[in-house]
Length: 133
Image (cartoon, rainbow, N blue to C red; front, side, top):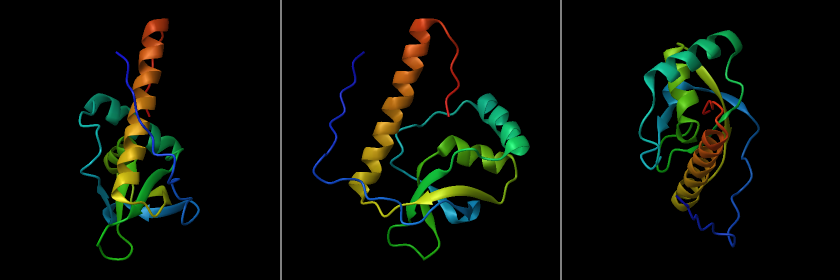
């Protein structure tokens, strides 16, 4: 299966508004536009165990909640880390905050989905196991 993703190169994705910061999980809402809909509960539990031991190693990407209260965010990338952090009973998660339009948010989500899918397919062809982030 070939996947073609057209990326808008005329409007670059803006840089981070801030460096990495710990944001309370209760201040983050999952995006309704995230194309990833299925999550393996066993893999989430395994990731939660790793997060309990080592913390979250890669920050999630969030944007200020469109039309929402200050200090509340929409999750753009990192749904597995976010869900596993909740399972691990963490109060906060490391996050990078960016000001993004709806179109930019969806573009980043599709790019991430494509990267994960291509990595998985490549590993399948090589006969190796893969762990999705």
